[in-house]
Length: 272
Ligand code: SAM
Image (tube, rainbow, N blue to C red; front, side, top):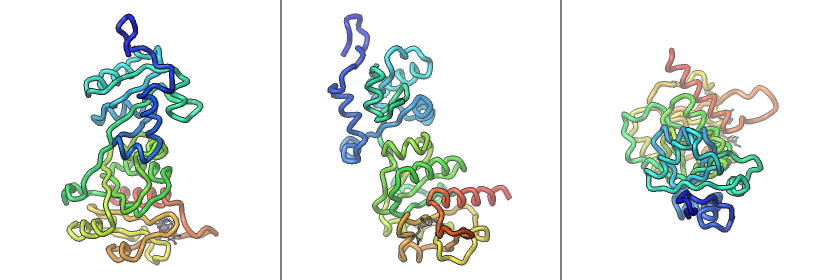
C-alpha cells in the first residue's frame, strides 16, 4: 500500500497478508505450496543477487531504503516483478523468529537441477547425501561444498529440506552458489552407472583409510544417514568405501565434519 506521498507505506501489522505468507515459509508444507523460501541478512541477500537471484519479496527495516546495498536489492526485486516492503523492526523479529534479526529478509523462488540434466562433463565433485535429517548438518555441508568450489549436492530419498530457514542460515548463503538435485536411490544408482567417474562411499565399517582412496575428478562422495549410515543397495553401487580412523572413544564423526574431511581430501589431491 502507498502512503499519501506515493511512497510504500511501512508495514506495522503482523496480520498483513505478505507478512503472514512470509512467516508461513518456516513450515515445509507452505514452502512446498508456494515454491518459495526465506533468506535472511544483507550479506546473504547481496550474495544471492551476485549469483543472479532476486527476491520475490524483500522486507527491509524502515528508514534503510537508501543504504546502497539495500537500494540495489530493492531495485532488483522490483525489476524481477517482486515487491519490496519497508517494515518495523518488530515485524522483522516476527518473520525471522529471532530476537536479533537482520535488516533485510528476502523470499526467493526455490530451484533444483534435474539429475538427468547433469552432463558427464559437469561432474567434477558432487556430494550425495542419503536421507540426511538435520538441517544444520545440511547447511554446513552446503557451505563446505562451496568452500572447495565443488559442484553441488544430490539429496537421495527423504531428506531434510535444503530450503528450510535453519538450513539456509547454516549454509551462510552458499545455497545460492551451487546446484541442488533430488532423487530416489534407484535414480541415483542409474545416474552413477552412466557416470565416468568414481563413487566414493563412506562407512564406519570400512577398513580402507580415506587417505588412500582415488580422489580423482570426476567423483561423487556419498554420505550416509546420521543414524543408520548407508544402506546395502547404495554401498553396493560404490567403487570404493572408505573410513576416517576413529582413535578415541566415539564410534563416529558428525556427518558434516566427515563430509568436510572428504571434501578437503579431494581438494588436496587436485593440487598434487
Ligand atoms: N550409526 C551409523 C553407522 O553405523 O553407520 C553412523 C552414522 S554417522 C554419524 C553418519 C555418516 O557420517 C556415515 O554414514 C558416514 O557417511 C559418515 N561418517 C561418520 N564418521 C565416519 C567415519 N569415521 N568414517 C567414514 N564415514 C563416517
